[in-house]
Image (cartoon, rainbow, N blue to C red; front, side, top):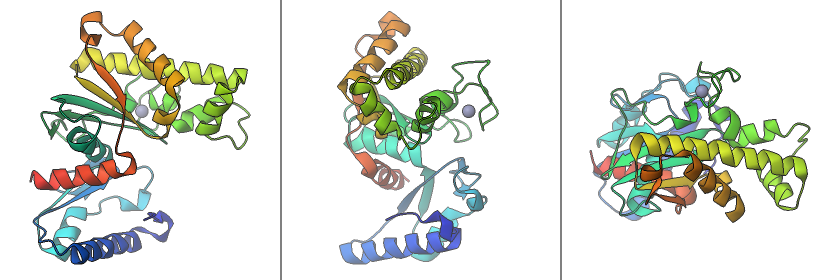
Length: 268
Ligand SMILES: [Zn+2]
């Protein structure tokens, strides 16, 4: 169901809880725990939403407590990108890999690290923000405080912004125009492939993972684009570390986060 965030957090939360109650009733299953995915940053241990840039009125929402009070079972709140990563690792494109990194190329860039079926979330739960690794130290200032973050060049939003005079073009339109031979669009798409490839090379050199999964609208940009991303990654990563890595597109689409949130609850 659509979030309808403009209605304010109280209404959104009530609709989410009611929807969960309906699903529980319909399934007839005995629910042992509930997992929820939510845009970060958040305190997953306490289940508190901190300051998601796209949900400004959600600051300080004690989502875990709200869910537990309503359903009287343990609940866990996890970063939505982490949930998507866990979903892909358990049931999607990362199945069978003991180490997997997810990159979701959407409005922003989300990412997750899954090691042996468990999320690596770091000491404070803020790990795997590859969208905010700097690829240009002199680049423009990012909303996170850093400069020249990957997200500012390679997210769908950034692709549209970089296509000056894009008018009403979406990132998808720009990819299509590039395929049809529009020179400006093609240059932007080629540059984007290099940005993403460079980011993947950084990930490979840092973690040497078995599998890297690309998700989100831009992962559907086509085989040619995907090939260019892989080429750029291969050129930049350490040769030994690149050997044997699987770079694949996601399999679960919008369901990845839901499936991952359920896994997160199962592992409570
Ligand atoms: Zn940033």
